[in-house]
Image (cartoon, rainbow, N blue to C red; front, side, top):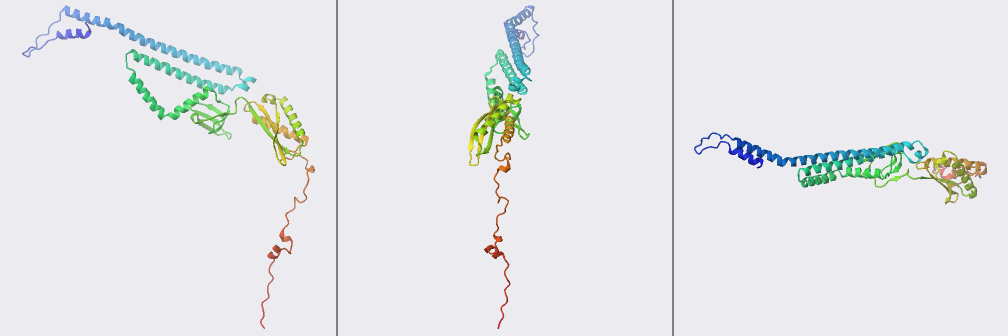
Length: 367
């Protein structure tokens, strides 16, 4: 007999009113009735305790497995990030580290990736565990999942810009499109990256200003610090100069520069004289190019201009617009410092006559 049946048995033993309206004396339960009620209650507990115990053990097992799995995953992610940082610190300060590794960039990138992975892992593990616990109590999850889906769609429409910025930042970091210290052109702004976030990227502009660029607004990125850079210098000389002498002078400058420090490390290829870039009536442009370390093209270009100017001065090759040639060799125009002739210098010219004062006329006299 179940517990409700035992309760009915006890209720049957309670006093009942008589037809005349007076209540009879309560019937005193006998020892047999009490024994039967206790037996029914014990049998009900005995029949259901296994179900309760199974549900409790299942819930406890789900919680323990979720907690252990979450801790293991987070610890594994943390160890992976620490190993990445130790690798960066090991090569930092060496020549290879200076060329290929930016410690601050790698540190921020690893921290951002670790934070995203830990958050995603915790959300998946805890959310799955909670759903499994609710399913253990035989709760219908269909309305709950439907409500969560509707709420997610509403939040997605309301905060679509925030979601777009966040997802764009995650993919930018995972794909290593740029990092701290890189010179980039993001379309809406350009400059040096000083901080990379999941929603906003900070850039230091050429005038020192700081640009806050939302990751979702970046449609294309030009990274000037990845791989290698190109240093290009245009040398404009007179069209009467000997091309062989100009090329020999430039080759000598390139050879000396490639053997001196620190330019031998900044140059990742030989300095090449590409030839004539353009030829005009009174001048011609010779193009000089070199492959350099990322972000060092401007420094190499300035040094190349400095050395080319000095070499051309020694070789008496005039750069158009400069004062490298001997002024005595240049033809002098004797009329260069003379003013243009004036029409008023000729007294008989119509202009001079028109500007001369009129002679006074004598008054006419009558006879």
